[in-house]
Image 1 (cartoon, protein in one colour):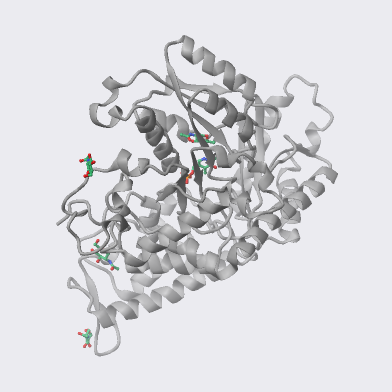
Image 2 (spheres, rainbow, N blue to C red):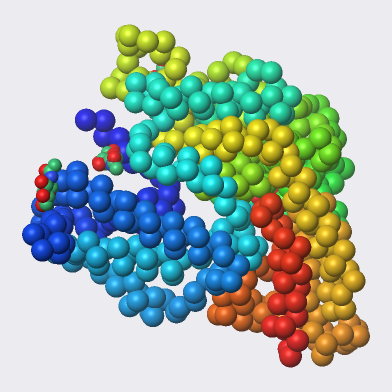
Length: 527
Ligand SMILES: *Cc1c(COP(=O)(O)O)cnc(C)c1O
Ligand SMILES: *[C@@H]1O[C@H](CO)[C@@H](O)[C@H](O)[C@H]1NC(C)=O
Ligand SMILES: *[C@@H]1O[C@H](CO)[C@@H](O)[C@H](O)[C@H]1NC(C)=O
Ligand SMILES: *[C@@H]1O[C@H](CO)[C@@H](O)[C@H](O)[C@H]1NC(C)=O
Ligand SMILES: *[C@@H]1O[C@H](CO)[C@@H](O)[C@H](O)[C@H]1NC(C)=O
């Protein structure tokens, strides 16, 4: 048996799977449908009739609790409990004996009830929200088919599908040829980029390790996602060799500072090999000037990666794709269709312009039990060795089915709609007393402070910032405890805690956006 078959690194989806098709509680036990129609419990496996019965009843609960109610604006976004309370309510303990069918259905209901409804119209907390029913169907089918993406042998439909989806995504970037792979999340896609770039610059790093490579320098903007640091640490490059390039007011990398940092790194004996530009930064939604960064990367012989995990989806929109002008000059990009396109967690790709099989050469280990060279079909279809994983979850189906359903035009409309809703929200916000933008939004992130009446006009008092810093956390606590909405907040570069509203779901109405302003005011007026 292949040792790592069936191992998925994605704990979120494992969790989802567990809550859908129940369930750890039932492992080692099963129910039998007794003569009187009561489900009993026995430490034997379910037969298929019983299994399907349970599944169909659980599915009704899932549809009701995790889809229907979860998207109903009259229901709560979240059901806050302290961890100790929640542990009790969910009765998480695993025991020697299994539970009955009815108890397990109640477990499904409880898990749904006490989970955050990320598909609720008042969930603005993350860079994903809303629900696409076709993508959801794709996710359910993926879980049910339960295969691994590594070979044509076990995933024939998905190997071909992944290729088509990656090709189509690349064509939006402007790359007729190239490479790519679905990864478990944008952080991992970014890490792939850094690893492939190092292999490109110093292929001996793969076989001889870090001893064979000079000190390497990585460049990223101050605003870049923390996964950059994680990658540098994980790959043995070292977090101190990550040079942070300055950004302007709205969070865009300043090209002149990139040049200065490259000179500085060289003077310290490091070899600049990787620049990481951002298209849609996590907090402010800033787009770096990609053309300028490409000029600098080219003249220094560096690999240019664009982290477009968040902003990549603008490529669908004729109206907004100018934000990523120059992206076709990059060597690689990260793009998360699970964010703006709403494909569902998780769906992330690394796309590459390379046509020399770098991705495969960098990661392959030629496992002979899996990637036999004497198979009866074209072994180039066994793409699994491009990955650093063994078993790899199928992440293409949800995107493919959704794309089939609405077409590229539908996805473009989704992006345009998010921009239009953002504009509506910003206009409303500007007209309201007590709301102040942190910076003019470039994208669909809206960063703003709510200033309660007690602080208005006191901007010059000594403790203004300290007081303002406390406002967002208190409002957040109140909204979570009441379950009325969820929106994130954070401090940034000397700017005290502000809200970051993320507007992306096409299911949002103007009244949801109005509600958001009303609710923040209602919860914070007395502060
Ligand atoms: C979300 C995000 C990431 C990380 O993606 P995950 O899928 O959450 O790992 C990386 N970069 C940017 C700019 C992001 O917005
Ligand atoms: C999924 O695959 C695993 C092995 O990888 C197997 O143990 C399990 O029974 C399968 N589940 C379903 C629902 O097919
Ligand atoms: C499954 O179990 C039920 C109840 O225990 C029994 O009535 C039924 O015949 C079994 N079905 C199969 C296909 O074994
Ligand atoms: C690059 O910058 C982006 C965006 O800020 C960030 O998310 C990412 O983690 C960085 N690192 C790498 C290795 O791409
Ligand atoms: C895998 O096989 C290819 C082609 O035969 C070879 O070039 C490569 O060096 C091998 N890689 C490893 C890690 O064994």
